[in-house]
Length: 414
Image (tube, rainbow, N blue to C red; front, side, top):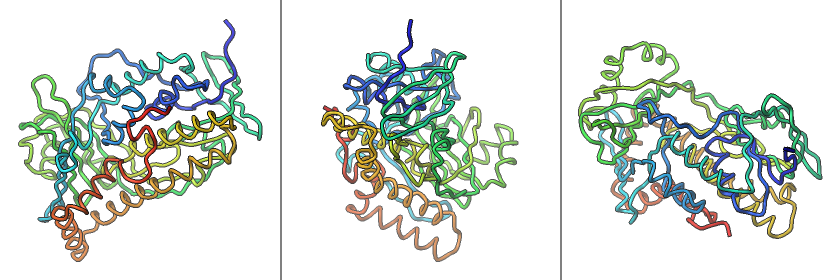
């Protein structure tokens, strides 16, 4: 059988963001290849250690527009109905509630593996999408008329011709590196520890964001399992503290976590495997070039505070998909820089807003200087008692502010 070697779009990276873009373009009059090293689909039974992702309400709308939300929901989610924000050792608090927004949830928590399986199943239903896996990028080149991508696929080298290359290959993006696109970068000197933890009391669909002197501690509701109440934690520590915390026994780790979080959920009774990753702020200085576009973590990486990272990347997907479909419908060149610039310009404000919000929150709440501590607690109280301010912050966190593309309004591209 002769392999197809010409596509309108080649997406490098078939993880959650790359696969979401491919699904958004499914059924359109565009041929798409997805290049990915690791299959999304996984037939294993759910594990206690499965990683999770927090989806903002706006991301639910995007998945609604793609036509995949019902499948995601059926596989198992935990709704975030309330968010409790506090500053350890201080009285200031802010409470956000979906009822105040006339919605059934502010967001949702889902296992990344289940989300990946839903995306993989959806991808398989489209005739215009080819997933080449396991495959990896070897080289690429672009010119004014077309682009060429050399990949390693099934132990052979294959060359694909395309109108557009999309880099969706994560933080260490090979596409960004091969294109020699520079990045603005800042190391926070912090590391996040991620684990799933069982609790004595039910979470009641409340997410907690607790600021500490080492960084934020997020506690997110998960679906209960095996007669246990479960939450997912993202605990930010200074780099110098991580080794000692990771060396603790499970019992001592839970005690340390308890002392930082308190007893809102009773005792922490069990922990799964602990994962770590260093925290960096990064934004590519160019998101588009002739025949090239970057999305997701290939374009920007933010601090996990407020769970904005994946949701920011999914909004990239929604905008780029709309720009590409509208460009193709108008019989214009989808890879031309002048047309891709519409995507970059549209996304710029949202990206800088999220970067500014997350970065300033980390810096403000990691500082123990008394005047700053007083000011931020006054800010928390003010947010809690001033409905217009609370609504503004809540809609930003849900991904519902600014100019929204069709998918982010729950609408199909056409």
